[in-house]
Amino acid sequence: MLHAGLLRDPKPAGAADGVVDWPSRFAALQRSARDPRLQAFYAAGAVAGDTPLQDVPLLALDVETTGLDPATDGIVSVGLVPMSLDRIRASQGRHWLLKPRVPLADEAVTFHGITHQQLRQAPDLDDVLAELLSIMAGQVMVVHCRDIERQFLDQGLRRRIGEGIEFPVIDTMALEARLHRQPPPPRWQRLWRPVPPPVSIRLAASRARYGLPRYRLHHALSDSLASAELLQAQVAHRFGPQTPLHDLWN
Image (tube, rainbow, N blue to C red; front, side, top):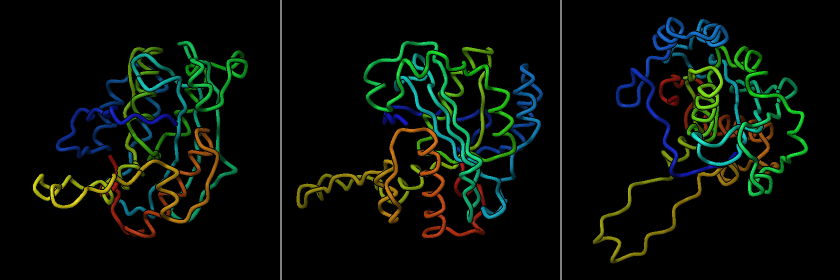
């Protein structure tokens, strides 16, 4: 996945201080959605926020893109891996190459290795949308940098069907940021002692802190698997299976 520190995931409608009642939000979105695929997605409902993590249906998600701006760039691949806190069903993972509606820059090819030739006969996002949403339905997405997955899928749908998408996520990058991204010390303190560089919360660096193996980076399926394993490690080390979902999701 491409990461951009400047991306900001907008709060869904109905959010107060970043807290969303997702079951109620999905009920409202089902009533307002026009596309039948979106209607079916929202009709599956959302897990209640007080559900223990061990009982939450989870789906690791990653997208690769042509660039970093959801308003002008597009999705070139999507990876999904079903999981729970104690099991990752990698054999049931899905991966799509998708033909974007914007040019694929050479810099993006260098980054994720997806070439123009591979995408020439690839389907459009709209062609796989029914299947993609049916797999996502009823699940809580696990991502590393929610700004990418939510904004790119939202914008991709807006360009194709005229309406976007909202869904809850557990963001493993945000969980690392809670621990490692502290507010800067006051200026007087910085004069007396140097401020150490910020700890990296990128996917590979975060995994390394838990002793997880290195995988191929920037491939949607392997990054989904990597995010799934990272969440399992984070919960085992810092939370617990009884932690309520609303403590982690966005």
